[in-house]
Length: 244
Image (cartoon, rainbow, N blue to C red; front, top):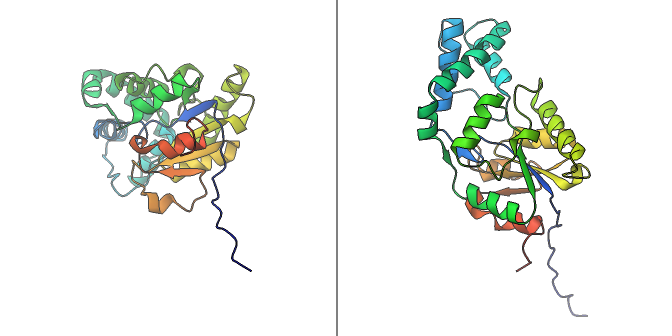
């Protein structure tokens, strides 16, 4: 009996109506100016400057980052509210520098535009405090198509998962989606995947931050891509382009 003909297993298509975007390392970069502002805020409040180079801070909300940095210099995590208030002041005082240094990552603007043209609504789930997150989005020229009013920012809740749940609740309440099955989180860290799992939405990871495709390949995301400038497979999974 001849061997059966080989079959090709097409990955499941998972249509999307809402994308919840991470910002830093996924959509844009500040060229280090954001990190410097954070360290300056810690120094101004706590009197010592932390060395955050060996700390894995990606995918955390700003309050968690502040607490981790304070702990690293043996300072009281109770200072977190003062640090975040000082961070806001520093960023607003350097707004021209932020706007000059902030850049969308390759492919980001094109992907957002394609999604907008397809009728997909877009907002954010980010660890940034709202004032800083909005500044980053606007400075990168990503508002619109991103609509931040229904998004989740790092000062909206006490954990990244809770921030994401708030954003999901808002988009469902505004009838952008019927439920989590129609929503995707797109981010650049394993914590973005954990956040997506916590609220029951799909997840795509983009290897444009500190984490490589290889290191994220087996984590269980719906898809891992090298960058938003190479996103065709993502659009296939979203059922927004035909199978080749």
